[in-house]
Image (cartoon, rainbow, N blue to C red; front, top):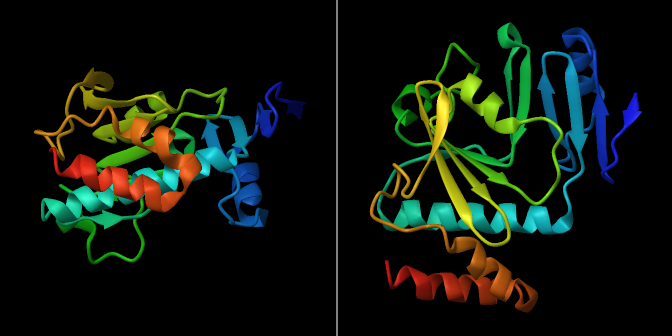
Length: 206
């Protein structure tokens, strides 16, 4: 086991899939770590409180927009996705089924690749990661990824196995979303009510 130079991170190499399953089974699933596994390489990340706040608030923003535009969805939040055949195991900050909702809406258990991956994944980019998560998203076949830091939201769409940055989401093609993190950054110290109030003001302009 090697200690990551980044506080709160653990990075391991040459971890067999069977050992990964044991780690997942024994680890208490409390939302305090993000797990990424890619063909023997395992990273466990402890997100910062700010990371968690951005995740929760952006999740609220997405749900509010889906409701506003009367778009049906299924939100699975902080979820572990696995492809044993590809030696991939990945926890995402948040994810949504939208276009593929009819294919999974009655399922209690969703398994890849028997079922489609989520249509939209949200990644909060406030914590250093040793493993490239975007390449794993591509191998899982996730159509769209929103990557958010404190200043800007970037949208990536999958095209022939690779992600390309685009200006608008397939979910909200008429809305410019890149400024959403600034609403959080400018108001988070004043509390969630202030963030929601500014978001509601922004909604009136879209």
